[in-house]
Image (cartoon, rainbow, N blue to C red; front, side, top):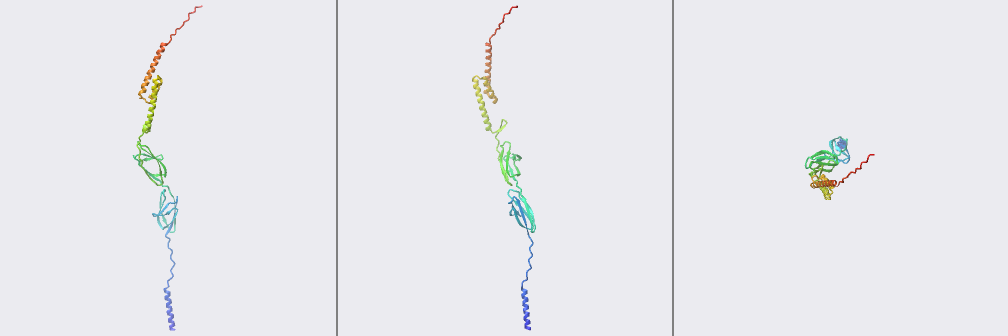
Length: 276
């Protein structure tokens, strides 16, 4: 009995030790707390670049998974004004942002040589050079610069959305002259004067021929036409005076001839009739 009891005691100890070495069953893990949320970004038009905290994260439309907390959101598209704002992301939350992007205006800086030229854009005065325009609509525009003593400068310009354009035209000195109330090139004035001198000379020569033919009335009329066009024409004055003198001589000689040739008319008186 003693031996059997001892064997049973040893077996019990071995069993207990074997049970003590077995690992205990682990408790189920606690699920982690949510540490992210979503930001949905849409734009009109689409295709804008989306930046989060300075890093590019995609193009619109886009859904972003961001860590919980505050972030800086930026939306950029060429030709449109950028949009920037802060967003707060909550755990397992969703933030939606929709933007209708505004077309970016262009800037236009205009200078000139010399400075002080009056500037108009599409017919509207905008100042004198140098001048900077900060809100120019994209598209085609008509630019005009005027400065006393210089030719006007005109140009058709095209500006793109968001573009910064600088112009610095060199104005050309105005060589035009005022002639008979109008500004014109010296060459144009000289052409007019040369044509008029040729016309005057033609009329004058015709008057000389008329004088030589004894056509003094026609000569006088032609010389008067010359003097209307060129009041200082010495030849026309001389021939006009000579033609008038010749005409006066002819009238005088005609008058004498008429007086010399005038017939003497004698009246015939009937004899008196005797009274009945």
